[in-house]
Structures are given as C-alpha cells and as structure tokens.
Length: 303
Image (cartoon, rainbow, N blue to C red; front, side, top):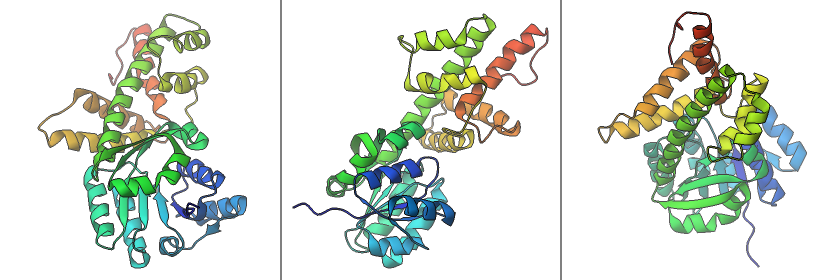
C-alpha cells in the first residue's frame, strides 16, 4: 500500500486557508502554523489537525510542508525556522509568489540539509483555493515533484512541472503580466460601457460567453456592477508581483510598458486608500476619465 504523506501548512491567509482545507479533505493535513495563532487554532478545531507553536514543529511532524506567505523575506524566514528540525527527504512546497532568485536560495538552503524545495506558485483566485482547482506552476527536483503529487493534486487541477528551481516563479511572473493586461482591458471596457449607458448586468452575462471573455471577467466584472471590491487578489499584492516581473525583465535589458503603466495605476489606487481592495478596483481610475469628461474638465491624474 502507498504511504500516505503527512502534510503541514504555513500561512492561512485568503489563499492558504482554502488550500489547507483541501489537504484535509484528501486526508493529508497533519499540522498547521500561522503567524496569527488564532487562525491556526480555529482550523485545528475544525479539522482535527494539530496547531503548532512554531514552524520547526512542522518539520518534526511532516513529510511535506506547504507554505503560502506574502513576500520573499517571509519565505526565507520560514525556511530558516524549519532548517534546524528538517528531516532528510522532506519536501517544502512554496505556493507564495516571490522572485525566482528567492526560490533558488530557498532550494539551496534545503538541499544542503538533505531536503527538497519546490517553488509552486498558484493562480485561480480565492475561488480556486477553496475549490481545489488552482493552476500550480512548479519548479525544482523532478523526483520530489513526482513524490509530492498527492499534495499538489489536492490543491490544484492543472499541476505542471516547468524545470529547475525558479522556473515555477518564472511561469507565475508570466501569468501576472497577463493578468495586468486583462484587468486593464476589462476596466477600460466596462468604463466605456457605463458611459454608453448599457445595462451592465446583461452586458456581463453576454460578453462572458463571447470571444473577449476570461476567468477574470466572469468572476470580477460583477464587482464593478456592485461597486464593491472585496479582496480576492489585493492591489498591494499584485503591485508586489509586478515589481518582481519588472526586475526580471530588466535583467534582459527590457522595460515592459504594460507593467510600468499598471504599477503607476496601482500606486495611485494605494494613495487613494484602495490598496487592500481587489485588483478590479482599477475600474475606479478608468471611470474617473469619463466622469471628468462629462463634467467638462480634465482628470487630475490621467491613467
């Protein structure tokens, strides 16, 4: 009989909580740790897993440890806390979005201890995290990737190995650039539609079935209709990701206009107090263009 992996989870935020619950549904979740202990305690009570006081305890209890945190420094800090107790052949799967260099650094530190690191950033929003339907982009040792399949498949429906350490993050950076283009297009199109006095509810339903549709349009355009932007993917987080993309492109001597434009827009939204809203709040800036034109003026800050 195949051996059941014991999985630990670090980082029970908007994405991590749903991912950890899916590990539990597949009988894999053994223990959890979160910076805010109350979240870990609540999930432990819900699932029957163990809530630990520090990441090192996960290293003692688990064969696979999944991390989902916010920034590069957080990933490396968790790795450093795991290292003193890490067992040989343990696999750490990092689902955060960080730089490829950070992924390679984490892999080097774990490899030196006889363990493995898979950079495995995800895409699919909080809905995908909840439903176990994420796209998972993986870099790292191929044998570790194969051994970690039960854990990866519990969290995602499209799980792809792209190559050596860092390649998962490079694939995610590609995705984040695509997302920037989609949100720009949807925000401008919906502001235009509003200016034409179209019934936005019927428009969303119809265009959602057309050639210009996308997951983002179907799932986030309704935010515009409701004028409410609950955090699915926060502006501040996408800004962080696009800065990573900018740095990666700069190494090739290239500056990508879409990245630069979106970063300017995000900075304005953050200054206006919308940094913790979903990225669909970009509509605010596009709508302001039409509002200023209707008022006979020029917007103070042109997108």
